[in-house]
Amino acid sequence: MGTGNAISLPEELLTGIQDAAQAEHRTVNDLVADAVQRYLDDRSWTSLLDYGAGRARALGISESDIDRLIAESRQEQLPR
Image (cartoon, rainbow, N blue to C red; front, side, top):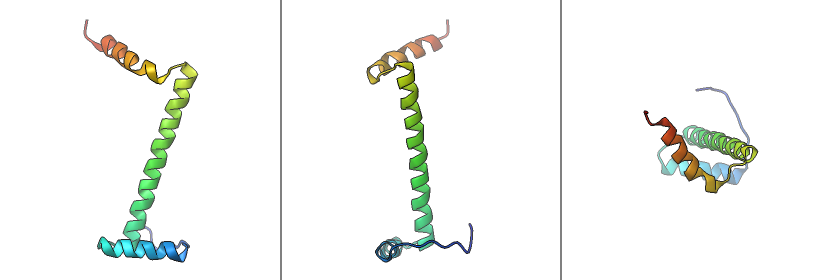
């Protein structure tokens, strides 16, 4: 883990983070690192979902088509 990093936070937010870290018996650094990692993971999923929605629009696929397309794909995968 890096050392010597610094960020500025509003005092109320910092107090909330410190209180939460103490309640969970964790360090502030661990709590913030976990929160940022969760944010980045969520952002990655959101980006992936947005990409999928864009591809579906480009291909003219609607939500009502999904079950049928899955069934067709599974049928194509069956050994002949």
